[in-house]
Amino acid sequence: MKILVLMKQVANKDAILRINKDFTWIEEADLSFEVNESDGYALEESLRIKEKVGGEVVVVSMGPQRAKSVIKDALARGADRAIHVVGDKVVHLSPFAAASVLAEAIRDENADLVMTGLQSDDYGYAQTGVILAEILGLPHATIVIEIDASGDQLRVKRELESGWYQWYTMPKPALLTIQSGISQIRYATLKGIMAAKKKEIKEVTPNAETVGKPSHQRIEKIYLPQKSKQTQFLGNGDAKKGAIELAEKLRTEARVI
Amino acid sequence: MGILVFIEHKSGVLNRTSLEAIAAAQKLGGDIGQKVSAVVLGAPSLANEIAAYDLEKVISAKNEKLKEYTPDAYADALEKVIRATTPEYVIMSHTYQARDFAPKVAARFAKGLIGDCIRMNVEGEKRVFTRRIFLGKLDADVVSEGEPPTFVTFQSGAFRGDQARKGSTAQIEEKPVDVGEARMKPEAPFQEAKQAVDLSKADIIIAVGRGIKSKDNLALAQKLAEAIGGDLAASRPICDAEWLPIDRQIGSSGQTVAPKLYIAIGISGAIQHLVGMKNSQTIVAINKDPEAPIFDIADYGIVGDLFEAVPVLTEEIKKLKG
Image (cartoon, each protein chain N blue to C red):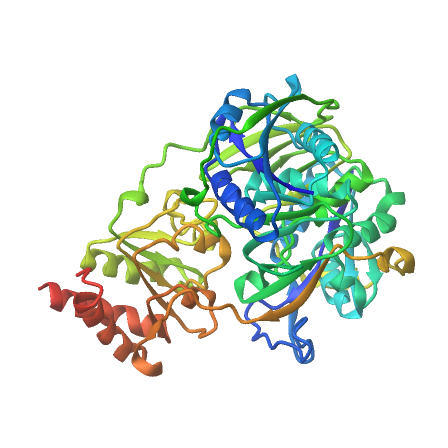
């Protein structure tokens, strides 16, 4: 089975974000990056399927040269080769444009399965996978937490809201978006890191026309969230003092003790 | 012209977040002077219920294949209704179902959704939709560009369902729609195990997140819960790591709670967690990161090391209760 895994590089979860001077994005200088969390689980599932049924895992990442670190890490964990859609602008594409560029990059691979995380940790659109499936004419399932790829058809378990689940069966090829936390992600071994150096990374330049298509949504400005509540900060940086003040407030103000 | 609001249901039973979508659509309609219609797929009896709201009409789309939800059938049906009614806006709640099929519909109009919005603001001709980015750390004001329809989904809680306005009975338009063969075949939805713990009835909840660092450290939170008379709960990563069972999970994929007191320990406050607890009466957050989104909704905050704060808080509460 040939599996394509779409992985995005995003700002590190713990990074302090600074807004750029145009208020349209964050300052990327000095920022640390990591793989988008749910994409990491998509890779893990791909590798597990390959181990069970055989085949090939191809990593696909779109972004500037810095995205190579995500690609190399995925190759070190066991992916067989990679496609890097290189560009600076592609990071900021609308979900439809991003899916259009990705579709052009992977269509000829004719994968049996395309997997990606359920949403990115930066823009958080949570749509690119579904739109890509539509463009490629593939059936899809979102928020997938278990995959049985052993039969002719795929059987996948989807998470619904409030503790409900549902199994779906669908033909291959198909596209799945994967929920975070569904398995333990493997680490890259030293052997894997060495082997990765010999693996192919194909660079693809996106079609300028596709990238340049008019966007249907534009960010006017970004800013720190407005507070919905006035928070009383206690202890002034001293956690122990804060705890003492808190106990008193919970008794006298909130009256919950 | 006009606004189309999508009504979600499970086997004909209304998903109540759709009332929030009606409230949002009515607000937008009032602001821009356009009429609101609703669309129900494959549930004629629900169409009658929805007709009680202040709407231009309720479109009840009919096809045998809409009896159970599949993204293929739903996308076909909603696309047909949109093409027939040519709305300027399509409004939905940002549910798991909307996430599953709405981008597919939008793609057929060569666009995506302005998704998971928390606010909207109409200033003359300009309509601004605000959504959270970077896991809730920043807000983005987004405007729509290009040809209608514009697809907007709202986060649960962005509007209040009880503010959906009732009106004189709306006209129901029964609309047979062509739907292709759905490629995905659903089995019956199920719950993993009967939920042993019903946190929705708890008065006090002590919830832990990633910041607790190890399973052994849960004892700290457990002691606080015992001292204060509360129940222990957690954010998703803790249950994923199996440090606590899934029936202790708060958030969109776990339980929704509104206790008198919610103490969030080492929880940064991703949107998926906040939707499950933001209606708590008093919210306390203890976190080392002063920028953590949990502080946006907290009444009391301690910025600092939870391993210092929690044992002291436990002792103080014992004293006060003693």
